Image (tube, one colour):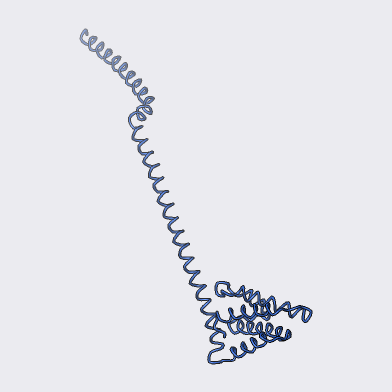
Length: 213
């Protein structure tokens, strides 16, 4: 019986010890859990910062590369557009000139008309000066119509011409304006020989550009 009591006492003591150790373990574990975020931050904070910094650096580098690439594409597009615009304008001008040549190929009719216009302009008769300007304007209208401009009035034809395909369009407009003044004001307009000579030179430049005379 004494041995049994002693064994029971020992077992009771061991139970209390185990209970105390268990409580201490629970307390330590609870404390560890409470400290876990701080421990992780202390242990891995540098790694996290490195990862964050690496991600930020990588994102910045990617944005720079993308920006440079986009700028290069835009620049290449602008250069291509400029080249294509130049090519298109050159083609339009060649087409206009080819159509004009086609309209008068193998004939001296237009040159004969032009020589007749010049003879009117060289006279001392003011009425013939008026006729010279009007006839030269008719020649300009015929030239543009032969080149594919179907508008009824010469002014409308000139407004539809691509300036890049018509280098002397300003001269054409200036000469045409004088023709309009003559047509609208008639004999009441005091036409000078200097104006006629200037208009003839303007028409000549236009016709020469397209090989019309």
